[in-house]
Length: 343
Image (cartoon, rainbow, N blue to C red):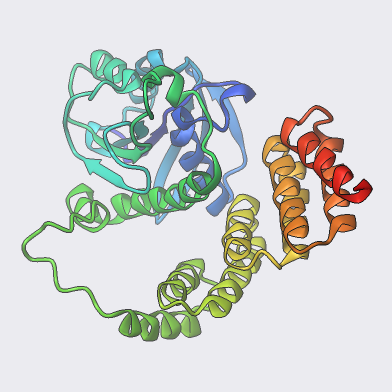
């Protein structure tokens, strides 16, 4: 038997699937690889793998390339080749039954309708393995689950998904050090547990968050907490400023997606942060997320329009139309501004 740990994130290969709900398992693997600078990936046994050390443990990060429904083929091949004991194996996957923003860790269980897990159980011949369920919530209206998981997150959901990605990576780190039981207790966060202590008041939370940030100014967690507490206390200028600092911290850590997410939180509080809105749009375009980049330019145009700044609004719309010349909302706003200028 090997002392190696196998950490598998589920998803579908191909750029068209990168941003979809079904690929959150890949996101967590990529987040762990970034944190520990594991860059030497290779293709083996129907998976992309990265070998290294996390929290003092020898690990193999893996993203099966079989497409979701055949994930078990890659998992079984890796476990057999590296002789990984089942207790050293964990898998991260999207879960429809868990609300977005939540994680649910389990050390055993059925597939819950998740076809990747279904196939892993089939190939391993057991359901007794650890898993991190990354909540994506249920599809709205009459949308099918299949269509829902193959769509990207939007708006605030996209921001929240980025935050949960980081938390899921934290949970995997905890699993390596503390095991599944303690990690479940910490990260499942069931507020209905009878022994849960009373929540501190917002002012008490503020003091704790401020002190934690003072002790670790380059740690994003205390700063994120501080921004959220300020917001709950309606100290909006302080909250926006904290999110801007958080964006700087993420930039220093080489995490551009989280940096953009922090910027977006800041401008949601203070839309007048025009230069930050422009930074967001440019960063999204640099990340080849052209759809969200165009949407950000349109939001900026709407802000300028609300302030009566028609020249600036037109300039922002030109940027949106440069990215997508046929964007219906941008064209509609442009026509509306033109009518106002000529009337």
